Image (cartoon, rainbow, N blue to C red):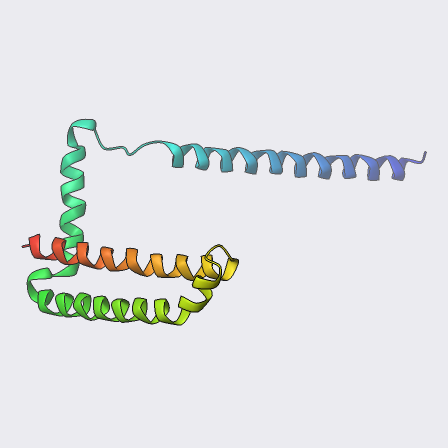
Length: 135
């Protein structure tokens, strides 16, 4: 081999080593980020309730319930009405399909949709109860 070929060989080997080292360092920094993300909060165990209270206060301050209570109540009431009417519509529109074969794919899909609407209606009712308890 000529001297030039050996120089190219060493340069190529050097570049390959640099690339491998860079990949390894990047992998270690990524692993450190994952491990840091998996650790629990840095809040002292004795102060966790204070931190939760502060976070709750921030949410409450953002909502401004005392100022917008009527708007929130109206929104929940109107959504509840919409969901209720949509449930009736879905039951009526899918009654024939469900009555033919309640286990068919189409029937199961319709039933799941109706049940999801019902669950959301329950969520709206719970939201109103929570809003009523909020000062």
